[in-house]
Length: 434
Image 1 (tube, rainbow, N blue to C red):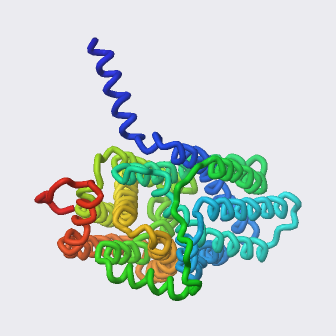
Image 2: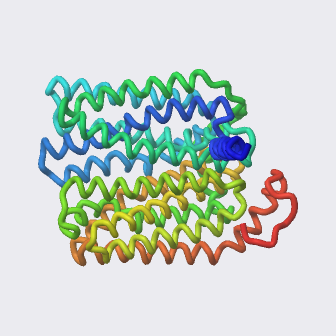
Image 3: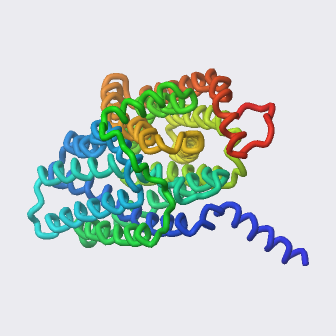
């Protein structure tokens, strides 16, 4: 009897942990996107390897990364306007189809031996431009798949789990395929993987309310979105925190090869272990968020997790012992994903529906668009004062960001609580900060 009871409790806990999968649309999205993301990570690793194999140039390696992300800064805010104007599911079908074509062109050029560096740069810019549209549309689309707002945090956490799970699987598969059959097969398989998410999107039935009347003036709607973000404290401070972390703290990823080879005296496998540990920490963070019952308390959690992230970076910068470094990377990955997913959850919960796409485009600019500039800054500072001191500085700045956000929690609380009361997320005014 006791064994059966324990078994039932475990099943119940698992159902609660995966409760967003109870929604048919989210289930379809989760399955299709999981396979597609593995292909995306395979292509990303194969692309970097191909560039370095062809050129032996660290500069071109950085340039490819820069060209893939900079379109988000240039086009992201405009893309947000169309994510509000158009049916997001149909928009995602288009972006996924374009990404699939890009992967097949890349596969064709590589497998036929025609590929040149300029092809890779152009195709990287094309994919970056497609992603500039895709990210705000995809982030906004999550709320269309989950009817109960109480389950929105769970859906975003599972999304983070899916992303980081693919980050562990994709590069590993790519490494094996590159060694035996070359980069072209990775690009080909990525192209094929897009079929799954496109089919999943087409199989969905969504109830998104698309505005029938549009002003026709994109710049007017863009200005309206910017004024909304700047004037609404919860979203304003979250985007400031994300931009600060992306610009001044996330460059730690760029410095990992330096730590693997020069600080810890290892090789490519050491780099793989460090990135893998960060990924496992991120998976653990995503599962923790998925297990939370409510969005209440996420403000304080952001402060805590950002401090964990910063302390992890500072400690890692002083470590010269691989097992300790791996443990610290695990902690850093946990803090990073809890901060990012918690920020996403609050924004998605409190934003006005008619401005969701534009707000998520500014979110993407802060999170993704600042990263290439952060990499350039981090690399320049590391060149002058060394990677360990640079990473310690990144950690200190993360903690400064957490302190800044904490100082604004009272103001955030004033705006968020009435929204949570109206949505039924809270029934009465709790005494603790949200």
